[in-house]
Length: 62
Length: 217
Image (cartoon, rainbow over all chains, first blue to last red; front, side, top):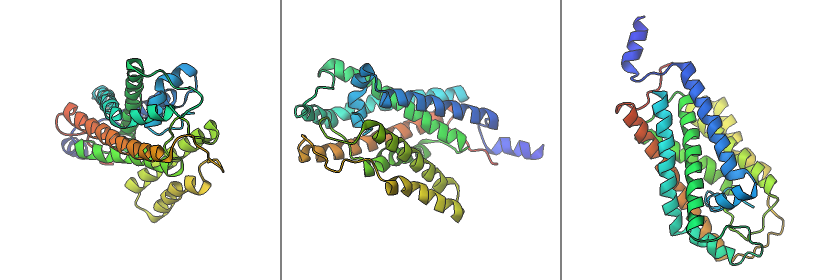
């Protein structure tokens, strides 16, 4: 109990471990998913739209 | 609180996408368009305002993707985030996503010959993930056993070797390719620093000037 009080005083804005890990995994998978479509997907319309971005961030383009 | 942190990530991604679109117009985009004049097969979109607009949209999407990935790293490692640590995370992103893959695969201009696309994409993803894992190990695990594992991960993609053509012929002049390599790497560095810095600063704001604190575990 005492240690919990100390923790909440010293660590500022706390987020529980499960929420933090859940949100972290969500951000990771959503970020990777979005990156895949903008940088790697080969559909012609996506390729043309993202062409200069792919070259600029030095991802393999074509 | 988490919603505000994720919104801060979205905003940092959008702002860095806006920034990098402007930064690319200085050096990177003119070099891509110049290289296309040497290219035989037209695979690029038309030039003009429409092209800049599509690049802007995809830059914002890439900015948001990278911002979410950095935020995931911060949340999963239970570390704190403010302006200064945000810049460090941005630097890490630059090393993992730009420096390490470019050590094997040079920045490509339209018209430059290269190995098969899927093999390059595979090597790029492998290198980014191995380098990111190595950096996280160096940052959070101090035991010699872990450090050696991190070093192995850092070197593995380069010992395996990037897929390159034995005789790479290019219709693009070497001077143009050299200018492009420097332009993309400098622009990418600025992009990652802006992304990490803005992300850290915004998280500092939404958490009431305290930063996202790491939990003592």
